[in-house]
Length: 275
Image (cartoon, rainbow, N blue to C red):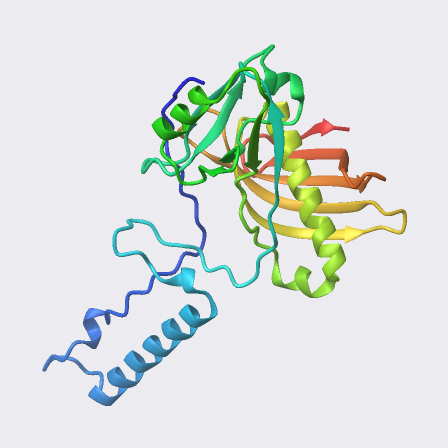
């Protein structure tokens, strides 16, 4: 495994902060034309709104040590991970998930290595466990030490996740889907992300912003549409409108049978990864 530095990306829309400081026009000044009771009433309403938002979603609160705000996520979907057994040499290139060194992800695979030959691991996935050891928040050096000390004559179990966390879903869509349909749509989105990462032609898929559309047809196929954030140079990012169709095989595996991507700006065309 080779260490590579990585920029940390932050992309948020309509972010909110928990600051309750009143605008300057609300401060008590002799020159102010706003009655004092009106300013106090508005202050109370702002405090009530922020408190309600925090109760609904604690992630609304801004960290005192953070320079970035957290998106307000009133409704989310689930997540999943998987385990695979590989023998050394693994043939994986790792990098830190963030600047604080919390966890590592798969940057790329080495041709001919165990990871590449397995066909199970794709770039962008996060390493969660080595054997039974939780490394989801471990530093790069600690992960490297564990991998180096693992025996070469026995298969090594690695648990990985897609790093997408709980994906946002449009509230109107959530009302239309049954629980089973929502789980199916979640699985199709994650399978589509794997295909995009495996293909690699669009760059690194960093996150799924929101799932905007989903539906299950009479033939059992599930169609989804979602926005994702990608990067081709490790510095700049762009948003992509992705449509995918998936079906569940008899063994439960989701097979993506159609996948197209349209960049929000600049392309003027749709790229069909799976026609």
